[in-house]
Image 1 (cartoon, rainbow, N blue to C red):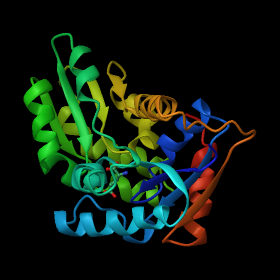
Image 2: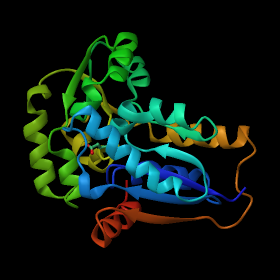
Image 3: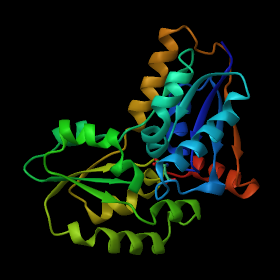
Image 4: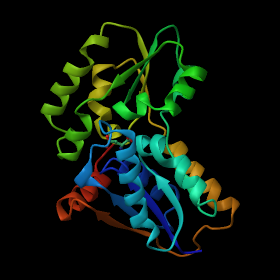
Length: 251
Ligand code: DGL
């Protein structure tokens, strides 16, 4: 069934998830919408994030989509339950910070969870913390989405900024770091350099696998060859160019 698989993010971060899904299902046809004009969502109030997510996902729903991936932890926390209730007919895959595997990777040290302000303050995260929150230190990744949206993820400026943000945790035993925002995998290398002993968890592969499982279960996989991707953005051509560049970025 050759309908589209829609991906939504506040900006370019969801490309990290899209890339994983395209690797896993190269015959599928993907449609990516980034609301770059309004990113970042993280510092916004809940009702605003909900309204923006509804509008962005609405852009995908104008087309023939068989599944929607909310490739954004923030939008998932704010809006996934609402859209699931409205569209029970549709496969909807959300994201959450990968606390569970990080929790089991501990060996006496702590887990840092880097995510947006909204992800860390909404109820979904509270539920995760109740299950896997021992020795977890939540850290708001203030300014990081802006670095990635500005195309500056691979620069010395990004490295310096991360050092400043994460300095307070560098003397501790950090066993694992959860990249709880889909923009942050594009900052993986400098984060790993600051914490060489820590294992990094991003949940990207798990999300792509979940999508594949749900499509298989409903017999909705594309039998066509080859697949492809179309990018759309509220930020215009410049944002689409950045999406394409990040798609090709080495990991
Ligand atoms: N990629 C979004 C996430 O996973 C970033 C949210 C934002 O725009 O602040 O949370």
